[in-house]
Amino acid sequence: MDKLLMDVGSSKLMNSINANSPKADQCRWRSVANPAELNDIALSMILASAAAAIQKRGEFHLVLAGGDTPRAIYKKLRAVQTDWSAWHIYFGDERCVPPTDPRRNSLMAGEAWLDYVQIPADQLYTIPGELGADLAACEYAQTLNNVGIFDLTLLGLGDDGHTASLFPGHEWGTESDSPDTLAILDSPKPPPQRVSLSAARLSRSRQVIFLVSGESKRDAVAQWRAGENIPASAIASETGVDVLLESALLSPQK
Ligand code: 6PG
Image 1 (spheres, rainbow, N blue to C red):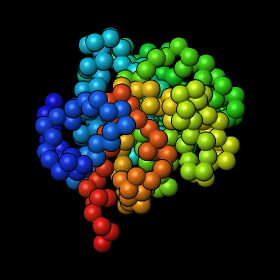
Image 2: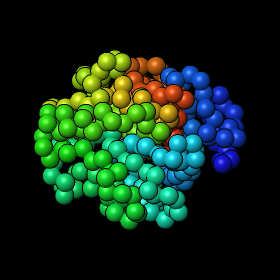
Image 3: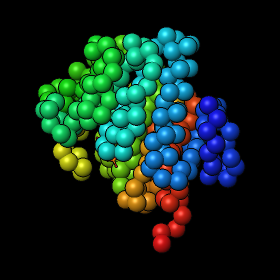
Image 4: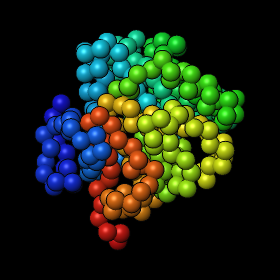
């Protein structure tokens, strides 16, 4: 896969967006022209990650981002020809509302993609947010007990620098002995009750890709690139972190 990308960190064209880096905490800023290009490149990276995992281990363990940004990417996955029986789907976080509530990340992913492909139902690991944050976090931690390192974790970025449901001023679970899941009872982004994978568990992944689009993310991007301690900056992976973001977010506000 040879999508050319401007690596704004080193201002050189990258021949491969699969370039693995030995530094787990390295952050590679991948500038794209617009949301459509972000969606295309994200799709390419997801499929490259899936092909590598399935070829090496026969399975692909993917953590989905919530929010709105990934919806268009998930819709593109509907048409992909792949061995869906090898795919295992997890969620980075979930809102504690009923499964049919339009705020549910699992409903968004289902309506955009998962309802259209033949991933075995017992390989779709939704967070049971309807149980309430404490019980759902406990149940999902048990689910993750049997899961090793993820192959790919997709994440979004909130206006305040949050990712998944890890928010400034709240627990992020960054220690190696942090629990896999956190119950959030006072989320600043509604709804108040959520479950999130901890920063440590999100980072136990071979690859992490952030999907960042929208003018409202400008300040969070600037904080992140300035080295400020925001929840997104607490995420690492075996091969570092790729941040796909619109180039407009890198230039000074007009
Ligand atoms: C959630 C998400 C959250 C999201 C960011 C960005 O459940 O709200 O996990 O972390 O990814 O808030 O959301 P948008 O993609 O809608 O901007």
